[in-house]
Image 1 (cartoon, rainbow, N blue to C red):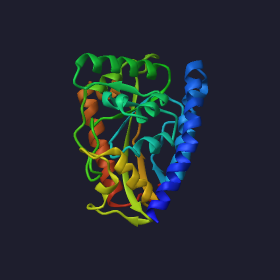
Image 2: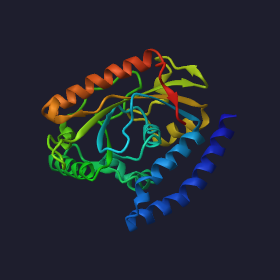
Image 3: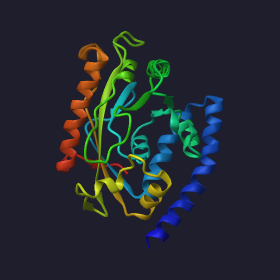
Length: 267
């Protein structure tokens, strides 16, 4: 049954995705405003197709520019977060070389960074600043890698330099934390031993992991947004990274131990 489910989902996914990739490429080439919104609509459909139910708590960003700082568990985080609001991602440079995935990342208008090159980190921070000045929302997976779904790893502070004290309007750029936890499979709670089966981390092969998700059952993921914070209030980037890490860890712990009452499904 799992193989049949996976095969049907894969067929529908490719039949749905390939034409939209061409449409998005045309939107980007022409500078059409829809280039920012099509990926969000697309990822809502992907979540429905995969059977991923997204539950929200806290207040997601509405129209304001914001650097969203999140923990990172799986490639599923991309469609899950993008389904909530139009945004782009900061991705490691290796992603730009992955077959097919690199095309999807570029069509999402991702910003690539080589964390091993200081010049690249600075260039990426400048690009993110330009995106924020233009009123966009950008996601930073601040751990620099993905986890096994049972913990939040330490945050790397370098790209927090993208949140300027003053910003384009003189009021300062805004940061908002995001905690992600995958909580249920087939409606049954995941325990500590089961969560790594959903997570994609370490040296896992992406294709085999993705096939396992396609064959699996419906998933529930809980997303908690923290309150927006200005760097002008918190201080320098290291203090901002520490603040964000503490907030994400706190919200992550809350989500992983008990489902918040105020959470509601959006997909």
